[in-house]
Image 1: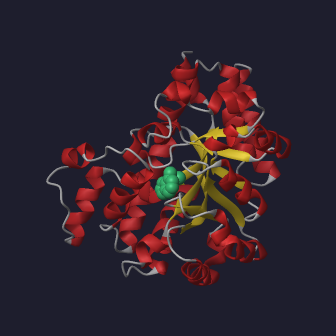
Image 2: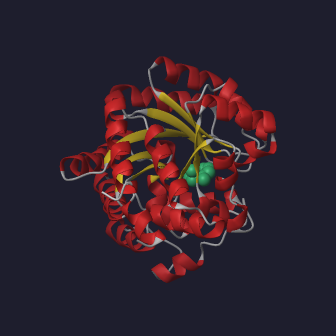
Length: 336
Ligand code: HPA
Ligand code: ZN
């Protein structure tokens, strides 16, 4: 079995995926036509050519523009269904999906329509061979605390549909402390807590995510590696980190795939996972990310299996489900 075949055969979970970031240019075009939304491109190729980013903000500007074609529940359903089909191809058994409700309600799209469309596709996949899934409501950190509280209030009547909350968008200038009270409230609502930190922001943003937001999972976390005491703390607590290699490369968080922190994170005993972040924008789905790091860092099968194991132990799944997935990885390694 080649390394690529092994990556394909590995049962995996994806823990860091923004559903709006899975909007492929072809679907963007189709939805623009369906909804009569003007877009400043004349072909999917032209859209792809515009995906050149020097920093996170360059991407975010295009990502929010892309969302404009998502209007009705059927658009969110089509988007989610397309991602799940791709996830199944990559042998994903479980996915934990972020969505950005404020990116839609801010344009006049009803919160309920967003949730209805996404969950219809998730429920369909659950009935039809998988993957299983959880949905995570992500706050846009460039917006205010009041706006995050208002979004959490809208979620209140759908609590059975969400496993947790997240924090994404422009990191610099929007430190975790801005959302301390919102996260405390979400914790009281028994929601799991995730935050993007240390993608562009300094190690302090990672520390504040632990101390002020009391997160259960850390998204990205690259710059934590600059602070040995923080690395030791993340290792001791076995905090799950969701690394996104192709995203890091395309957003110039790293200059070369060999600078990817995954190998150092594994070496330091961190519970790191590999994820695609926004696959339609960053040039690859989950297995492409595994392949990219495996090639650049020359990862062996044991390391790849550890990454896949971490994706299940870091998922918000019950013990029995996790044990089932880990058992499948063990039998693959045993040649069964
Ligand atoms: N970082 C911050 N915000 C985001 C990202 C990301 O990688 N993807 C979608 N929103
Ligand atoms: Zn992200």
